[in-house]
Amino acid sequence: MFNQEKNRDFSGVEDHTIYGLFRAILLETLLVFLAASLILGLAWEAGFFWPGLVVATAVWLTVSPAIEFVTYRHWRRG
Image (cartoon, rainbow, N blue to C red; front, side, top):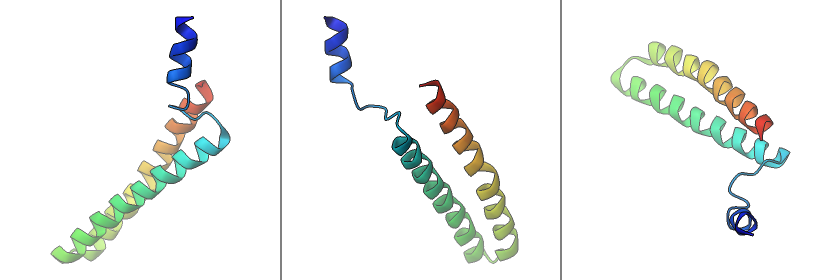
């Protein structure tokens, strides 16, 4: 009986549907984009546009897929 109450209280904490996975990946991609934009903006203001663009692109191309891979792996384990 305690397990039923526990499951009922915490249902919906993690969404293990394909919609939940899509929402998590979209949110994480947006946050990585904002971080890369912040890096580019700070580099631009400091006068280092090209190095900032390279670093922002590297962040976008490496961090975003890594987070998506971990999210998908966590979702698959359920």
